[in-house]
Amino acid sequence: MIKKLINNTIFYEKPVQSVTAAAFVIAIASIVSRILGLFRDRILASQFGAGDTLDVYYAAFRIPDFLYAIIITGAVGAAFIPVFTGLIFKNKEKEAWELASGLLNLQAIVLGIFSLVVIIFAPFIMKLLTPGFSGEKLENITLLTRILMITPVIWSISAIFGGVLTSFKKFIILSLAPILYNLGIIIGALFFVKLWGLVGLAWGVILGVMLHALIQYPSVRRSGFHFHLVFFDCLKNNDIKRVFYLMIPRSLALGVSQVNLLTITVLASTLTSGSLAIFNFANNIQMAPLGIFAYSFSVAVFPVLSASFAREDRKDFVKNFSQTFRIILFFIIPISVFMIILRAQIVRVLLGAGKFDWEDTVLTFNTMGILALSLAAQSAIPLLTRAFYALQNTKTPFFVAIFTEGANIILAVLLIGRYNVEGLAIAFSITSVLNAVILYIILEKHFHGLDERRCLKAFFKITLAAVGAGIVIQYSKEIVALLMDIDTFLGIFTQLSVSAILGSVVFIYLSGLLRIEEAHHLRQMISKRVFRTKQDIPENINQIS
Image 1 (cartoon, rainbow, N blue to C red):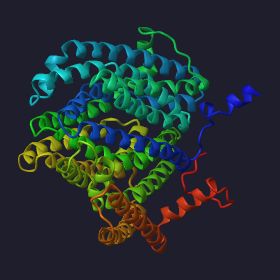
Image 2 (image 1 turned 180 degrees about the horizontal axis):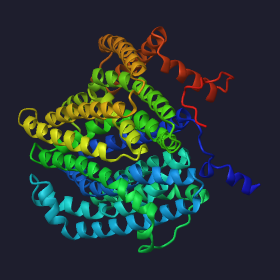
Image 3 (image 1 turned 90 degrees about the horizontal axis):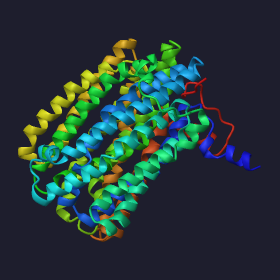
Image 4 (image 1 turned 180 degrees about the vertical axis):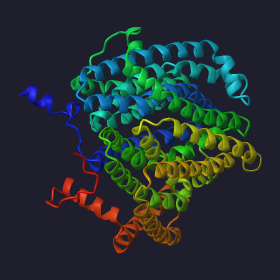
């Protein structure tokens, strides 16, 4: 009985066989994770305000994130999953597990060496990275950076675990891991800071990363993973060589993206105190729907697209890409409209407490509003890049990234003199749109069509419904302002809630009136999976054999 209970736990979940269902699982967990993330930001904002402390905290992430992106994300996201999935598909499980174990060894060793070098030379590196910081502020960022350099090694382990679970379409544990990561940071902010001061924030991050890795291990082990301590032998492995071949362009592309973030850090350090914190707060808020919807569907469809490529089924590839793209737009377009109209209310509710004053609030919601203008483009980029990775083409996203990130840096330098931190957001939004458009055009030419007629039809219908809902939101928030004191938390929360709910109801109504196909499919999916009705989802809604 105990064995049966263990076998039925989420640690040993069965693969999810529908992209929509998988994305639904990821999205639910992502909602919880994002709520925790926003709660984390509220704690940080209320305790420290947008000032020197949070500038130091966010700047300390730059080097660890840089290593994480170019080595871990490049290897796992773009290279490991397609190669590992291909081996599993061809029933070469022994070779697949040798690939996983060997890559884990290499990543941990390489990142360990890099981390040690950064720890030793942190004072010099951080002085170059944050030229606007000096004195105690520079000392603090050096200390936090040294502590956070532990995280890349742990992330390397967790990333391989996540790649394995993605390949086997086991998304529940994979989705719970970010929740524990945010819990670790919250514990650090609430408790560790009281014990150890500012460094408590860094130790909270360490705790979160450890929990992120540990929760995945039982399910990965159950899937067949066995760790072997090897180094030189794995360098001879042809599958690992294939991963390196695929990851190099992706790592370089991510390197370009990280250079852009480093540039933002450098530029923000020269602006008024708190500018880097404000940009990060605004970006974290607008990233919430991206994590819940865009990344959830992109992660869920990735192994499906990889399998379609392995079967050389171009029609199935285009079908799954188009359906996923349209569903992402169905969620993201109205959310972007809502966020732009309700930007002040959102920031006041989420961050407006304690030391986070009105000036911080205004700068944050202005920055967030600018970033939200490109939300649809930002949401398309994860899907588009994964489509190329499924084709085992990592070069195209790399060259596009070089061009667009270069444009981003140039625009940011030109705009910050006049617009300050908002200039960083303007540059980011413009180049995000450019990135998405270029990737889509290239992918469309590769397949000689991506069902663009249905995509464009969906885009215009969804936009029309979202604008209609936005008009209702604008009027409703003005009515609430006449009825309640919006200078209080209760008043502003009521204004936000009532306006968002009315807008959502109107959007759903207009979606039905305009016969938006994605709304119909989602209603059927929810009806079947949540309420267990006997309605069948049409065959063209992301069913996987």
